[in-house]
Amino acid sequence: MRDRKSIPSQDETEIRARILEELQKEPKKFVSILTSPAKENSHIFTCALCGRKELSVVLVPYGSYDLKVYNGRSDIDILLIAPELVSMESDFFVILRDHIETILLVDNMRSVRGAKVPLLKFSKHGIDVDIACARLKTHDIPRVEEFELATCFLKDWVDSRGINGNINCYLGGVHLVMMVAHVYQKYGHVVKFFGDLISSFFATFATWSWEQPVLLNQDVEMPSRRGPMLIHQPGTKQFCHSNVTSGTLRRISGELLRGHQLILKVLSYEWSTILDKFSYEAEYSRFIKVKLSVADDNIAEWMSFIKSRIHVLVRSLEVAGIYCDPNLVEFRDTNMDLIDDNNIVLFWGIIDDTGKKLDLTVPQLN
Image (cartoon, rainbow, N blue to C red; front, side):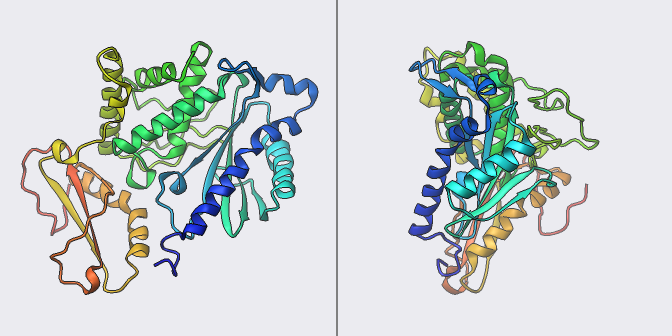
């Protein structure tokens, strides 16, 4: 499978980490290059922790790389959160592009201006990289370190609680970053350490009415068709692509409420309790068993394709009145009579299980 790049080699993994490390050094250089002396003052704040003058720019990886579900052919998706005064047309697509192309010596640099989410695309060491840009008001991220710490903590939270990944109908990396930014936009001026931001995050979204979209800019045209969880992508007219369904939104909402309730008891609970691993066995009494098998050795490639279509199956089950928790932890069925045991089994807990007998061997009609 390594020969087919279904699994990244150790060298490819190290190269990806090195590319990201190189890019992480560039945002502050980028802002200092693109801003004039008069304009630059609008992008500088004083770090509350160390007193250093810092540039308010954050670079956050998301997607398959951040979720550690990438293969040898996967690209790296990155979100650059920059001050509002940064121009997409002249700064992002010209100055930043020229800077990356010249300093980092990348290949195949191109601007994708007309996409739903405008991107800079390039390759480095044979690996494709996509950079999107979100522009926020200057004061929205007054302390970058707290923002980054809170985002890292919440990424651990969605991972440990099993609600991570747009591919399996939960929160993608960009969704989480935008939710954190929304909270920082409101409460960043009173945040003293990242725990304040975590508390505000759970307090905000534990009672959030998801008929209301998450916005960072108010002058946004609402889409004619609304999904169950709308989060705006700053710097564009689009909302973040989301596979969240009615059932998985209920799971997300339940975890947000749990986090909020634990924080209210912070004197009797450790912060680490919020990150306790979700127990599927304790939560669900019945599961839908999804079996995938092939007769040759391309199980990883086939599984990658199936994962990209999981949202279709989840939505189809919900049409039939079956709400499930699409857990992507992979098991193997050793009882199946298959060559080389090439199979993967997934177990999806049934939410709000009434005990009703389900026959999934025939089409389900609403």
